[in-house]
Image 1 (cartoon, rainbow, N blue to C red):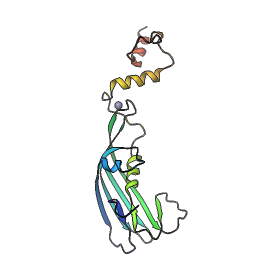
Image 2 (cartoon, rainbow, N blue to C red):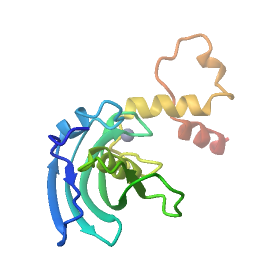
Image 3 (spheres, rainbow, N blue to C red):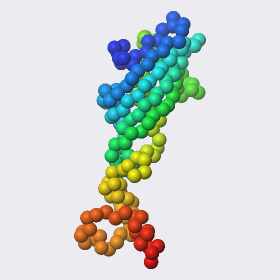
Image 4 (cartoon, rainbow, N blue to C red):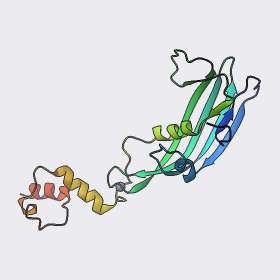
Length: 179
Ligand SMILES: [Zn+2]
């Protein structure tokens, strides 16, 4: 990647102080990444770069939100993101290391483009299950999914294709209780 990227962090052996960077990222940040599954969002990214004896320590602090499909109804929902991340960058041949955050760069490189790293920290911060707050789902879709999940013990009345309205499985449970 070229040095023209706005997310390019120059790394120099001569660096003495801690360098700070900050970014306000928006939809274009996600759109410019071809492989990104997340397409929309916004966040403030603060980044510090400190040179240690033989490496550079990058620390990221990210606060914002992304739009991703809800697990329950598939409509987009706002997922708040608040996360931190770190990277250790070393120049030279790749070596075995216990620290999986370590990136090795060829000596010829002048720095590192961290756009994809920022994206990854955001993606990793999304909880495994993410749904709208109760009551805010697309009701029609949520009901459809619920009826698919129930499956198996279908009401025979549905078989004729007369019923278009998906049934809420909770009503079925209620009906059973009443009997
Ligand atoms: Zn939803």
